[in-house]
Each structure stands twice: as C-alpha cells, then as structure tokens.
Amino acid sequence: MLKLEHIGVAVKAFSESIPLFERILGTSCYKTEEVSSENVNTAFFQKGETKIELLESTDPNGVIARFIEKKGEGIHHIAFEVADIHAEMERLRQEGFTLLNETPKPGADNKLVCFVHPKETNGVLIELCQER
Ligand code: ZN
Image (cartoon, rainbow, N blue to C red):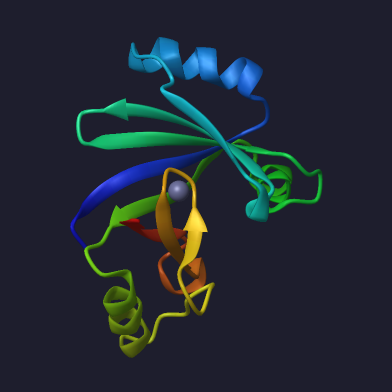
C-alpha cells in the first residue's frame, strides 16, 4: 500500500453535506460523480495528498442507505492507494483476509477498487484503489 488516498463518509444528503464539508475544509468540492453499480453519488474534496469522499445513496435499499440506517452518518471506509491492485489483493488473500469482490471493479474518480471485509480488520472497511 502506498498511502492513504481518501476517507469515505456516508451522508444522507449532498444538499446539506457538501456545503458543510466546504465550511469544515475551507475548500470547494471539485467533483461529483454517480457510481450507478454501487447506487451512490460521490463528492470529492482534496486536502493535500488526501481526499474526502462523501457518499450519498441513490437507492433506499443501497449499501450506504443501509449503513446510515444501522450506524448513522459518519466514516464508512478508508482507502489506500496501491501500485498493483491484483498483487495487493493476492497478498491480502494469502494473509487470510476476505475480499468483498473477487476481481477489481470500477470505482469513482477513475479508479479500480476492491474492498476488504471489516470482520477481520477491527471493523474498519478498507478499500484498495489503483488509478486506471
Ligand atoms: Zn472510497
């Protein structure tokens, strides 16, 4: 893993959370993007080398909607940039971790991504991402 790439935050509504995070971070949201395969809208903020990714559900039964129902709004995942996502997935498999997808899938912000199951990571949902 190369570095912390972004922190994903589950929110109920961009109409409230984008202005909120613009006030917190003192910077404008530079991109919003729908990831239809995940039923989410994403909104990105850059601070130094690291980004904040807000996640808003587009489906009342989607993963983000269900996450908020169970735990409320808040940190959903942390994402690490990797140089070779296939190699990193294989390394984590060898270490005994469960990957939530068998092959890398297209994510927001022009990335290939894979998630590691939080049951074996002290409850932290970890995303691997590689620039496409
Ligand atoms: Zn993410």
